[in-house]
Length: 208
Image (cartoon, rainbow, N blue to C red):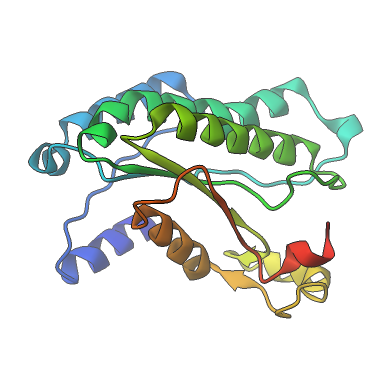
């Protein structure tokens, strides 16, 4: 419903918009989405793809002693394998128009986080993958990362982030628009590749 609402809003504003849906933890469904994108009228009209954003993610807390291999495989598939599969499958379209890939990583790199081993490990893998792609896909395609900090996107997160916000220099959480602005910045910066931008209100200053 949220997707359909956004689609209608975009069309009303004069933009072209459509929705494609797939379970990215399923390799076959991901392959089907790649083919649907390649064959989509918007893409054929443009003769390429300007931006690919890897933003599918699942966040949860779990003590390391309770982690299952199934959970690790699930997150590695979602955060690492699916972005690789999508990037490989769409690189031709991106290259044809000197496009851009932007991935949403995390501010946790290089730090230990309690009960988040599964999440932070897979996000670290995504970050490294994007750095590698930036090197291999240059000069035709740029690849960058946006690392969100305490970004509120659901009601339950207010309580979750209440203590964290006290350690953020800007003394507030971010919102989805803060992240989308950073993604837009990378998509429209033709001389930037292989970079990671923290969108965290300065949180990393106090958590290094």
